[in-house]
Amino acid sequence: MAKTKGDFYFIGFGNMAQAIYQRMDKFAYENIFLIEKSDQRIKEIKEMSSNFPYIGSRKIAQTQIIKKLSKSKLTSTDIILLAVKPAEIKSVCAQLKPLIEEEPLIVSIAAGVNSLKIMQYLGGYSTQMIARAMPNLCATKAMAITGLFGDPYWYGKKGGTAEGQLVSKIFSPIGQVLWVEKESDLDSVTAISGSGPAYIYYIMNAMIDAGVELGLERSDAQRLVAQTIIGAGETGKDIDNLEGEIIKVSSKGGTTEKAINIFKQKKLDVIIKQAVKAAHKKSKELSK
Image (cartoon, rainbow, N blue to C red):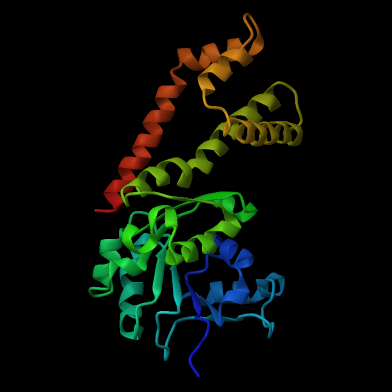
């Protein structure tokens, strides 16, 4: 009997893959394979597995934790998530190539490795069945935003086709998804939201340190800073003119104005733009 459901393969099972696994729709697949080359990592996964929802349930996909994929043929109903480091993509594709019977959907979260390279590594595999994704670390709290790209003919504008919706379904449980029009746009996504949490943590840390120097307990300072950033982000996404909002908050002769003036004097906006552009340049270099 032909399978009515395909299998889902995690090639690499780091923090991002784990976040996706824990929230994915496990009813949608026949089997889920967590594939890791490291014996130590496999041991860690097995020790954590008691905390994973649904492992072993007969009602949904059976999860299997293995070292490598073998004696299996990959078909068009299967989905492969490449969740390894960019430098490992070539060797992983070489291992996958002889197992492909029909073209499965391949989704890569490896930064800087474009669809053409993946196609070449797989030996002429159609780029239509390759999609790329750039989530961020906020996935662990289901608050990520994931940039997505796939051949517009196959995946549709903003992922509107059935194939596009299939890819969106993988990442929407960990937050929001954003389809971009050009694959090169993923370099911008990487520079802004992919690396973005680290920028915010850097700013958070400086604000927390300042709070401690002003006499606050570190835990209190961290709570104040974290909630302020959460609130500002939530309200800021609906404000069309952020610069105008800054002016409104900065009362003449007040505390906020004093702080903003320091930012302007030190050209903080220029520094941030330079940093983001440097990350963007590096992402483009990695894709060559």
